[in-house]
Length: 315
Image 1 (cartoon, rainbow, N blue to C red):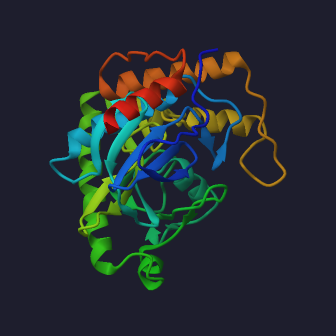
Image 2: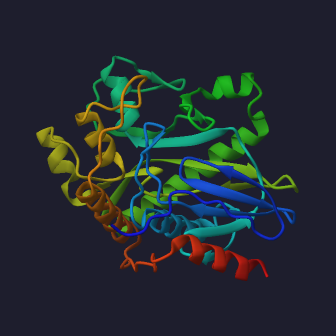
């Protein structure tokens, strides 16, 4: 197996704190800089799997940073530099405590809720008579609260967000506007690659100056779902599952093996061969989403490589 980056434990010059998320570790510095390291950890159903996926962190980081550059004319973002394949550096922000999920199609969580008979999701009505993976008449925004490590993100309506004062009405209007613009651009980028951007989530933060910016990842297979455009209509007509580019294939494998992140359930054993196939799928995702050949970084000692590149950048 290739070497993977499962955990980081750095003490960089000028570092003041570190936050460890499900996949990314964020190092904060005295000069309001953030160094975000994308690990090879795999999270599904809000649970981190015991084994890492080779090259996953590099793939997520490189897709996200590329997509930020491709959308910065529309929406400002936090990104300043990428000193290492697994690392993004940017401006420290106060994150909003909601994730802006936007859905163009009835898939994933929305489809599961629909199947259970629900016709409202996060305060938004879903039309009657839809089948799984049908397109919504208009994309719908279905926010979730941002969970702490180990907790589950929860659906929430715009009304509840405003009522509970999680986000001000003025700021929420900006988050909605940015979400729609990013999804439209993401849809156009995907179309050029022969893909459909099905749904995705965006996270935003506020700079010291009070400017709202896009943070974290964007249009990656961990935060988004893609279908292949050329087979979409045919598969829908036949009522067959869509071939998709996202980590949904991992979720489906876990469900088949009796795991959905519920209490008392154990994560099924992932063999090295299975891990290898997941890594290959992520590389396929990268190449399809970006239209570029994936170049594997040197993983003989990822911890050391990351450390040296970050320190060289900070100097």
